[in-house]
Image 1 (tube, protein in one colour):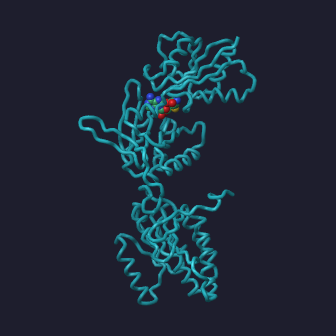
Image 2 (cartoon, rainbow, N blue to C red):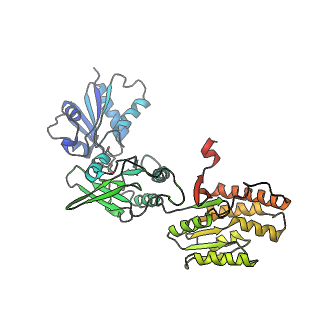
Image 3 (cartoon, rainbow, N blue to C red):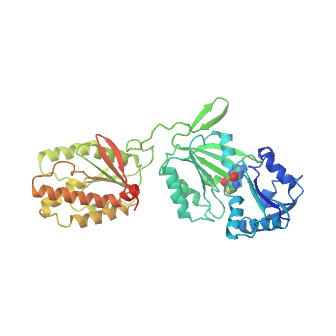
Length: 443
Ligand code: SAH
């Protein structure tokens, strides 16, 4: 006679946070299988035979449970929290998947539990009140590069993040790396809830900020909830603050003036028409980078009008910013800027005009120079904001030189855009983000 495997979640720890159906299964069980510390959470009044195992033997544990059930046992596989969240439910089903037919007679059920994120959220208020994302920082079962990419995407999409398995003795440094990725998208004041042993003896729940979180205070009994840009705290006199994420999201569109407070990184290309706000946007972004700023200026003071404009631009910038004059050699100028400083290049349009002026009407090498510039910018670790123009939207220029200039600039812009992390189009002081064709319609 074949038996049953019940994969159950005990909740975070307290018996009254475990659903009654799970408690019933525990008392019915002939065998209890699980990671040793979780089996220790099962009440002593439960009499089934306990078969504890170590941390990294999920597959063996699942097979053992299925075999015991095949021999007629009423087997309970215990996880803490919910068995479907970084726990045994998937491990058991994976064995069924890997061995078709082997345990066809065994009944398999999964019973839910209160996962740590929900328990901690309830303690703090309602930090998961809007969209959230659950990520394990353990790289035992997935490469760290996958974790980095998911963190970047989820933080970039402004989800509240629940970080499970945040830091262990074997991986002491990765939490700081993970927080640095999140900090690309969130301000240091972002609310963070730190829960340790929630619903267990020695519980602690603290509310801090991304800037103040001390990674060394975090261990494997800890869960982190990183707020979105809208997560807030509410002070209550004489009582702990309440944390919540409002259910209404006001800003549907991301633009350069309201990039949700993120500190900009990588190479950005800002294009648009004359007086569209490109230089101002580049300077605002640079000011927000929090790094020393180097401005590569391409204009040559060849007449009074240009001299006045250059003086005006310079006066408007903070005094600490360093200006590098580079009418022709942009790659050389980029090389002069320290790698982790913030670079502003203003602008590509004038540079190309200089090339046409100095090197003859063919602007020989403009395309090659654009390729070299694009790779020099993409290789920088600090942020780069590069201003160019869209000159191709009007009527066709009536001189051959004008048409060649327009076409060359179009190609140069496309070369730079391909290497850029973000491309913004500005008009009337507003920006829209331009996506790669492949992102929009597929390859
Ligand atoms: N199945 C479990 C998660 C297992 S992964 C669940 O649904 O909760 C183990 C991680 O969960 C821990 O490293 C920690 O980040 C988190 N965790 C589980 N129980 C916790 C608790 N009581 N307090 C704080 N964090 C907890």
